[in-house]
Amino acid sequence: MSFKKGLFILFIALLVTNLVQAQANLLNATIPEEIGVKTPEQLAADNDKPLPYGYIDDRDILWSKMVWEYIDLNEKINLPYYYPADTSNINSDRRSLYDTLLRGIKRGDIVDVYEDSYFVDKLSLKEIKQRLSKIDTTDAGFEQLNFGEPISEENINVRDLQSADIEGFRIKGLYYFDKRQGELKYRLLGIAPVSPDVNFIDDEDQGGDLSTMVDLFWVWYPGIRDIMHEMKVFNSKNSAYPLSFDLLLNARRFNAIIYREENVYGNRDIKDYVKNNALFQVLESQKIKERIRNYELDMWNY
Image (cartoon, rainbow, N blue to C red):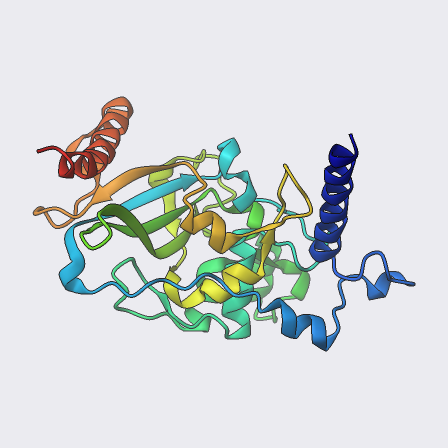
């Protein structure tokens, strides 16, 4: 009986310790401003960094397949990437994935931002901002312009994309078979937020159709792992252990559908050769995924 009591006490002690680690100085704070403030000694002892990728020699890659996938933020399992959509009443250390990317770009911490998933044409901060906002003039403003008057500020409407406008994310990654370790692995290479075109976002005709969605920008993922690791995600099962975006993405804790694979036809999308049939497009996506999975199984058949 005493042994069980000892285990119980140890469990409670570990739980309290983890709670303190999750919210630094929570139990020792005398004022709310002291919550989350760590001493220099605590910061030095944390050494909280993302787990680095191991070096992979090209000769160790026996087989590989590049795929593009879509993460739909309307699915329940993908909600941690969407919330919090409203940041007015929440701590600054919790942001959605889109807000995390955008804040890193505006601060200059994220510089590898590109036009598309082939990472050739870089985008400047000015070009990115143009994609994220719309400036429109009201009818009254046009009347002022016709009379040769300067347009009043109240007659200019500015519409900025918000986190709530993001419908999903497109990701690009490589499945490869590591012959040295004898297993199939996945490496995330790029990520892009997807939303309606800001110029037509308030039009009712858009209707959330994926064909009207656009990639706002593509970010080279291996270069932003530290930023993704610093931003924590709420853990609904245990708030003492917040997760990071880097952990969720690398562990593939999301549901995604393959919409493109590298192929001889110029890496065309599934919708380009399976037309006007959403069911067959999903089945084709599942077929690609099964071929990748079966490759690892086939490696062990003699």
